[in-house]
Length: 286
Ligand SMILES: NC(=O)C1=CN([C@@H]2O[C@H](COP(=O)(O)OP(=O)(O)OC[C@H]3O[C@@H](n4cnc5c(N)ncnc54)[C@H](O)[C@@H]3O)[C@@H](O)[C@H]2O)C=CC1
Ligand SMILES: O=C(O)C(=O)Cc1ccc(O)cc1
Image 1 (tube, rainbow, N blue to C red):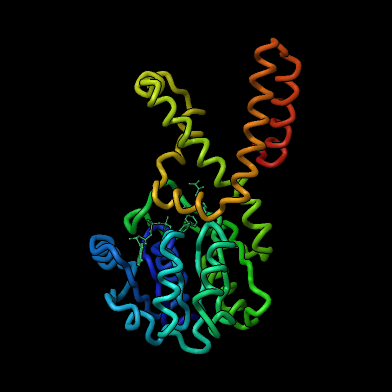
Image 2: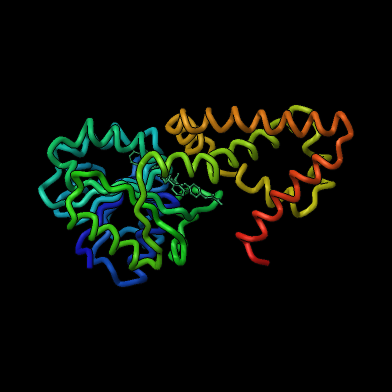
């Protein structure tokens, strides 16, 4: 049981974690530190946090576990600002969608407290944001990836594992580079593709028409283009190398499709589509 949990950034993910731990009776008190006054009031009125603190040192005081749940672009400044208020044994974790950038910031800013830092990433979310979008079941039956550092203390890793188990998640440990490469393909590139498709149709002046004629597939594929633009700007910038490599590869594959269409090579198209369908059908049983 966590006696006092401090959530930095009470939005979709921070808010959902607070609600989930409360529902599981896995936490005594939840203290929130939130920059946006509207989100802060909302988190209080929805019972996501028990107390809001405007002062970071006050927010951290007496916390057993601190969760950084802010956009990636805000992590480094916050790590720097919180460092003087940390105490030995206070477990610090984060939920950022990219791990390399957060770990580099933590190493630069946490000093001796790096041993109590356990990088994390719940592979669960929605296209909505803010505390009003938070819900207690978000992490249930979803995976949470942890990328502990060589110096992360076993007791800190155990505490973070336990926290995620309590909210129904399956915890998996992996390396930072593996995490960032995998997520570039399964999450970051798909978001870029969805944003780009909608933006392109808008530029063609065809969004209204396209939406009129859209089937379920368009709705499914484009849902993630409703995600928060600043959160996704930060993710793209934080995972630069893996994303650039994958974008280059994607361009080549897309070019191949274009060429096949150009030459009327139906066999090539069918071969690519059949291969993709087989992979997806095996993974997502109907
Ligand atoms: N959206 C999603 O589905 C998922 C997001 N993540 C990660 O979770 C983190 C948070 O994302 P969301 O919860 O979606 O965003 P959100 O926008 O719902 O919540 C972030 C909150 O942090 C606050 N904030 C920003 N800068 C701050 C600062 N310096 N001090 C205090 N509060 C600050 C914002 O006002 C906002 O309320 C990001 O790092 C994101 O990469 C991880 C898994 C899923
Ligand atoms: O909305 C969706 O389906 C998502 O893909 C949510 C999501 C967004 C960011 C992450 O790092 C993990 C999950």
